[in-house]
Amino acid sequence: MASSGIQEVREWILSRHQDRDSLSDDENLIESRLVDSLSFVELVYTIESAADLEIDFDSIDIKDFQTLSAIEKAFFVAA
Image (cartoon, rainbow, N blue to C red; front, side):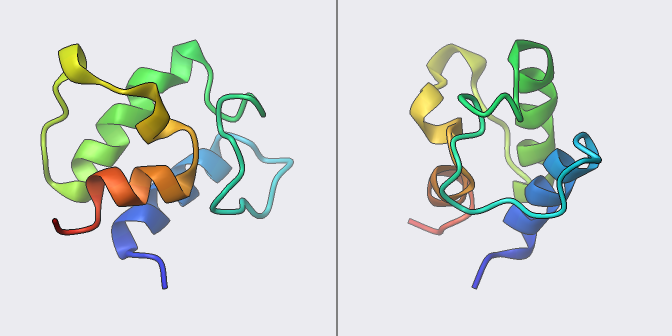
């Protein structure tokens, strides 16, 4: 079951794409252009808000942002 934080991220992405009503956990957000270079910073801020943490832009690994599953693993699953 997805965390409420990752659900916030999913809803944010879907709100920016009115033509979509669902988003699989493993869909590549970058390749499918659901997140582009202009919206990436907003995505990071959305994750920070939902996870109540600060993401260091200097140490970002793009792999952590490619799918909802990767985002959840990187930012919402307790170590």
